[in-house]
Image 1 (tube, rainbow, N blue to C red):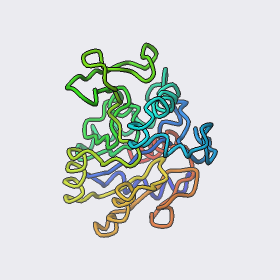
Image 2: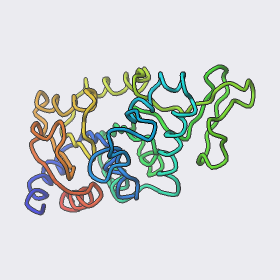
Image 3: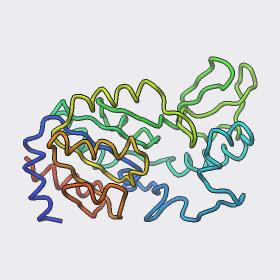
Length: 251
């Protein structure tokens, strides 16, 4: 890894507009399991109810069988409970403080980037601890789900409450999408893909765009992903270790 660090550090030193695209792998160093892949929360093709986890965690299933969707939403939240942001999140915050043109787009719903102090942040899939009613204006932020009855009902109208996250088959919310493409239209000097398999087109697209910007691209991931063949540099390591070493070398 040391040779790669030395190759990438000058790019990090020179760049002013840096994009970090992050997935579950950056939170793995906080003790959270990744969604799939190495050490994944859902390694098997089917869950106990004999359906794919993507179907259980879909907007359609939430409407048809809210108790099933909420069972697995609560399982994801329980895996996050008690964990906090790590050195990888903190390093990105330090980079942003030195280089205010730094942005983060994350697929994670754990809120760690925000808690660590990232300001130029696009939480494209929402945050799991923000809840809202599916029928009335009621909303609430919670620390965790330990006091919730699953599935929870709205205290005002008794209809279904859901977390403010994008479930499978649902559209991305307009505001973060517009913010993302506004920044992509400005371009970046350096693009990092950190701890994500990049299966969604809007997550892989910035890496593809990096070539049009003549910007180096870097992947930090112990496994093979959808964009591994596209990046200029690959670091097969954990996110926190790689990011802290990179930033130290760039000083």
